[in-house]
Image 1 (cartoon, rainbow, N blue to C red):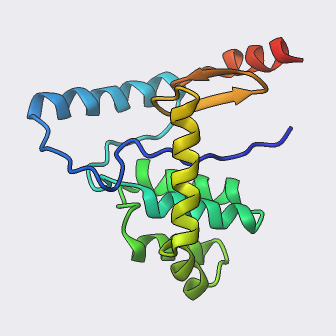
Image 2 (cartoon, rainbow, N blue to C red):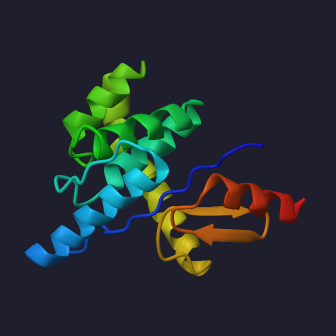
Length: 161
């Protein structure tokens, strides 16, 4: 089975984000902490990354080089474990460098119209399919949104075979 990563911006780059109330932030942080405990993952609340288009463009570049899974894992680790701003170009270039990418090529790619447009195409596709959040898992013609247990993903696959 092959995994195809699709880009989805929870907070599109063009959208100005209003400041969140302390109550909202406390609920969001508690939600991340609950997911961390529920799934046995190390996850921290990171307020540094408001947008992700450049990180998603980097994912498109990485996919073209056969490194999508490694790249996404590194970006998730940066976002949820190291509390790094994943929409900061210098941070992304550092991540790419650790994965063995040419820093200059990567920098040029993630800021290029080509890779930015691939992100926007994926987002449009998601909207056309009614996808409103992440993560979202689609196998053949069925899908599930939100954090899922291993068992529910196996069930999704088995039902489609």
